[in-house]
Image 1 (cartoon, one colour):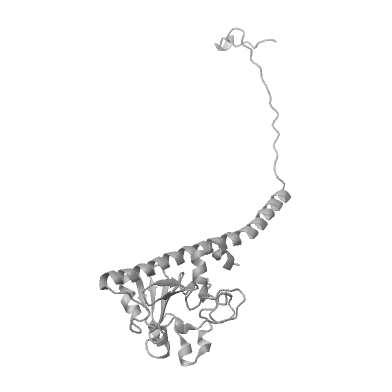
Image 2 (cartoon, helix red, strand yellow; image 1 turned 90 degrees about the vertical axis):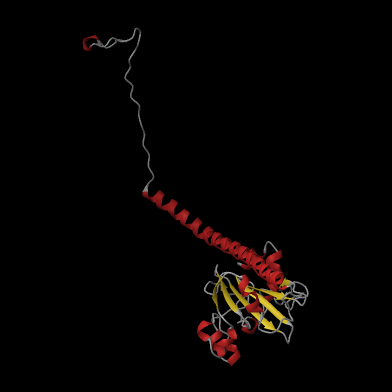
Length: 260
């Protein structure tokens, strides 16, 4: 092979060096418009199938975490009252005094009075009014429903005290000394957020004579049922969902079950 003469330009090639000009053939490829559209279509279908499931899973986990947190917060408030006063709040505590007794032990952003005040004075501050007390059930049509949404729940079990916590959760109290009944309930994501269903985002607890707080649906609580009348997808009982709190706290699959 004949070497090029670089000496005239002042460049001396290395001895025995060989300089060869090479040419590479480069082939460029691209997707057609049809292929791009097909790919985007497939991605869209996959997203449509998976994103709703991911959203539901996240919501279920959020509700579960919020329930466990609020259960702990309520128990702490009861224990702090006991530590400072030397006595337990219980089902025989004088009527309508439970709310004011535990209120100082929560971080609240709003005291809503009593839901039963909806039929008298103070309606402007009531967060979840109970119109059933004055016979006007039509106004309760947008309030809480059973876990399966088949009927409106009985709001008389949530209208003896209401307050909103700093995370948006709502504490609702039923306090009847005559019936030896104290229920402390919580809407874990607030009234303004769905689903507003008993057993989905609204959960009940029962306070006993000895001051013990149990999740509703545990054996011996008022809404325990062997046939799941109070925690069922099919029951037409107007308190269906009341007995779900125990399951929600003890069954790891519960929130995946009710999200469907």
